[in-house]
Length: 246
Image 1: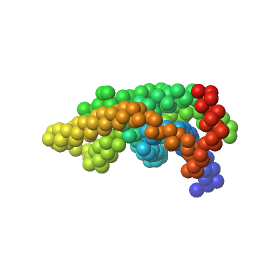
Image 2 (image 1 turned 45 degrees about the vertical axis):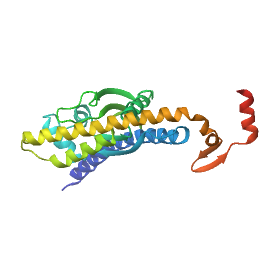
Image 3 (image 1 turned 180 degrees about the vertical axis):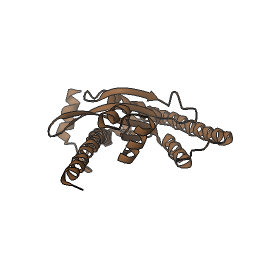
Image 4 (image 1 turned 60 degrees about the vertical axis):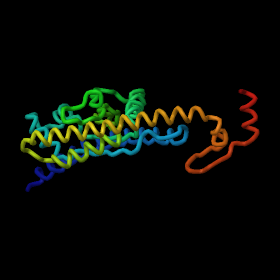
């Protein structure tokens, strides 16, 4: 292998590294936004609607295989145009209402460009799959330029995530046709997961109403301030000042 070939391989390696870094940085930007929302809810609200998050980057091999299946040119510009889920973030929420709550909070962030919304909760897939998908563009500032990078965000409940994860494990790389009986049972399992979500949503609403009716019991709790797991008691003078203003 001569010097020119080595230089070409080195340049290609740098290009693909920079390409993958863009998506890694875009994921980091979204993850930071979610972490801020989580901390805000922990400090200011009764509960956190976000249970957990999980991010992933497609491997270069997976990207090449997908672009080949689409019969598209194998180039960086073609990949950016035709594969929009290279970077993905999954947000798991407690309740169905939380899904739309988190979605609305992301939509109001002016630096995120919402390209597409697919609501598989209101319109589930035929196999029973449910989730809310947002395709967003995130600005990434690199040393020599700014890039707009696509990230796919999936928001779902714990029950939806449980069903989808197991469905993926059962049929991962299964290229044969699935028997109709198994398809029916899989759909029934999705319906059961949805029924559980609906019941938990109703219980959550009813408990929230009960809490509202007993707000006076929270007065003592409101005198406590918790920041970074440190507990502070509001000064009496401050409380008196607030009472006078009220």
